[in-house]
Length: 108
Image (cartoon, rainbow, N blue to C red; front, top):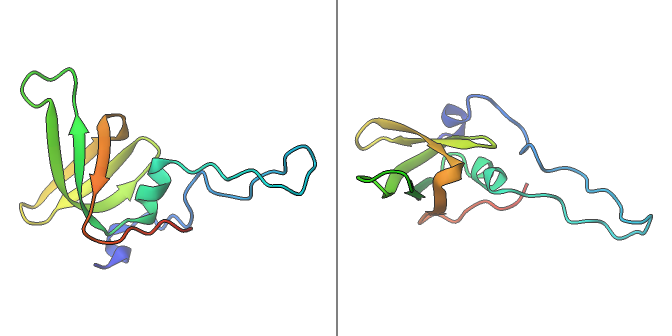
């Protein structure tokens, strides 16, 4: 999959990843803050299943969206289902978990 097509914003690093501050002047470093949106951002172009729950819905309480991660921000992801040519804007508030048959990229 061509990541340039999907990463049209050309964001270089996830927003929350950076140099961690030292604790109490020690040489020990605090683990960097790493959030789910960072993981999703690092996996733009990966095909997956996104399991969502909408507690206020009486018809579609639990739903699975299939497709490729196009963009990931701090509060939503954009997924493209090329099989049905559908685009989804999914709020992370309702994301239970994501699954993929491809190995995820977990390093910055």
